[in-house]
Image (cartoon, rainbow, N blue to C red; front, side, top):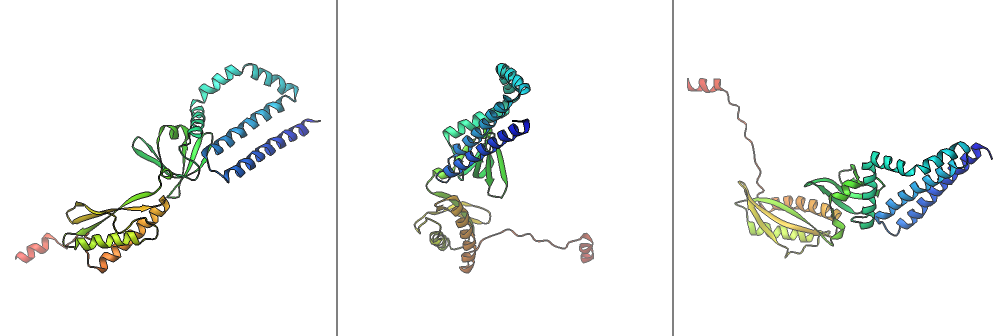
Length: 268
């Protein structure tokens, strides 16, 4: 068997093996979206490639001698590679840790916080040997190294049964506060996606120079429902307050056409 034939056979075996692994994990992922499946698939593909290339090297005299030397000096090579790729190796180890502990799974909504700053928020779409892929709600894709994910604070909203989100609106001091509270309760309870009832608390959470801030919590089953419900309720509050003559104060700026020359001419 000539060189090209052997090379073609091994390349075919590599492609077929990786394709078979992808099919198996695709079938398993239909039943569960556990994060360790994606990571394990990547690890198996890498192992298959390493074994296949080493086996290919054993088929030829020149590469057989080189592979034996590399294998005999494996400890030294491993030490050098580990030192040269500390960050990459750290991501792999962190990926293993995340796969075992499973703080989040694929298609779950998470918020990643590091140093008090939100660095990513959205849906987990993939976990590889190096990074975690997060689709954010603004349409951007955030690629976060596994070492960062392993050390950051991860808030997983799927661990909670229901989602609560604050909605605030300001009314003028002269407005009918009891009527405004009643309207706010009715709108929140009447939305199809909320779990609120008309007994849910609406409080006066504070004062401003323009009026009083009314505040309540909108409860929904998940985060997507929360975004939509809060938006609809804010729009409905503005319309309903307008129909019932409940003032929503806002600041205005008055610009006058003043000039010193006009003032002097008026004085004369």
